[in-house]
Length: 69
Image (cartoon, one colour):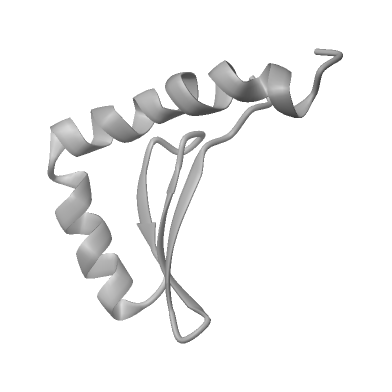
C-alpha cells in the first residue's frame, strides 16, 4: 500500500495536471490543467487504465528497485 503511481504533465516547468493512484483521478493545478483533468476524469476507461498501472508497472517491478522486499 506504500506504492504510488504518479503521472504528471508539465509545461515550462509548471505542473499542469497529475494522476495519482492514491487519489484515483486526475487533479489540475492550473486553469488549463483543471480543464484537462475534468476531461480525462470523464473518460472511465482512461481512469481504469491509470489505476491498473500501479499493479502492472509499480508492483511488478518493486523487486527490481528494492530487492529485499
